[in-house]
Amino acid sequence: MSETWSFDRVVRRITVMRTLGLCAVGLLTSAAFFITEQALWHDTALVQIGPATIPLEGFDPQLHLLTHLIQIFCVGLLVGIAIDLELLSGPALRRLRDERRNLVQAASERDAAVRAAREAEGARAESDTRFSSIFESAAAGMALTSVEGRFLQVNRSFCDLLAYSESELQHSNLLAITHPDDVPNAAALLRAIAAGAAGPFRFEKRYLTKEGRVVIAMVSIGVVRDQEGRNRYCVTQVENITARRRAEENVARYAADLRNLALTDDLTGLHNRRGFRTVAEQICAGQSRNRQPLMLVAIDVDYLKAINDTWGHEAGDRAIVVVATALTGAFRTSDVIARVGGDEFLCLLPNAGDDDVTQIRLRVASRIARHLEDLPQEFPLTVTVGVSVAPPRTNVDLDTLMREADRALYDAKRGRPTRDVEGVRLS
Image (cartoon, rainbow, N blue to C red; front, side):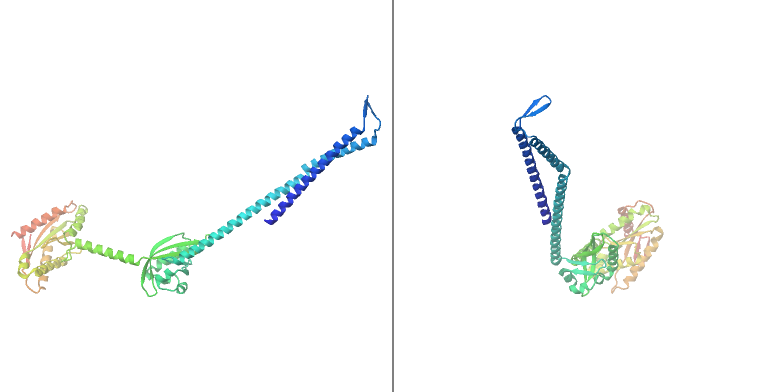
């Protein structure tokens, strides 16, 4: 910058000196011209007589000639100055002035670039300082890793999360502290990053601490690249969500338990009335597309009140459990079995029709008789069975099917059974 200003001062001085010199020469030349002109007219007197000029007394022809020569010289000098201004020194000075402007502009641009570079360097230094401060003081675990998963730098929170020291982690890698079940996904992600995947990436992952504990974390990974687009390193942020996940699992388990309690009979573990209706309505809705009939079996435990009064309610509960166990063993896993009242059971059997009624009744009777043998005391335990069947490819209303089964059940209870089989009244 000082050299530019020195050159500028030199150019200015040359321009000023040249201008002053030319002005001085011009003024002296003009003065000489006018002085000689005045001297010529004051020192001589000319008389015009025809074509001839007759000098008066005191006229000196040599002085007259010298005066004209001086005037011609002055005019020529002025013309030379004008030619110099336009053709010689003028363009050179203009080029110098242009060069001076270019140098000044270049110096200004260079200074601006230097200031911008210094500001950028200061901003980068400030950004690095701010990032380092955030990195070290962050409550979440943070780590800088290579694209291969090798640790470059970790903060204190990351070390505390996994119970490793900083030096131990810097001699390790991401896959070494990852839960074995999550290693394939972690390795696939590292390969994708190395291949140029842009990110950022956010996912849930499990880590293993130094003591072998499982830590569930929400992981965010950003990839830092240079100006040519090459991978430099990855910034990984890890948030411990183990407690939250455990709480969510407990809530889900509690909700499932509540659903089971709402849909399950506490004593027998079968569906209750609400659970039976929830499942049975879906089956009935699809019966219009089913090529097989649909059977509903209604079962009622006889004399349950007498059992409760004679042997106590615990005995009555055991009788209910016996019947429930017998029904579970008599029917298929695809059948829907429910306890819908104190002594009432319903069993919905897809793909079962009139041809299966006798076989189903026999299975129920034999199962109940088998479980009665395991009881410590004899119960006068009998059940009454009523059956209703919906034809295939029909629109089935569950309530109608239940009413028909109840009607068959009460017909059997009123003493009009079609057959008695080992303590089972059938209708």
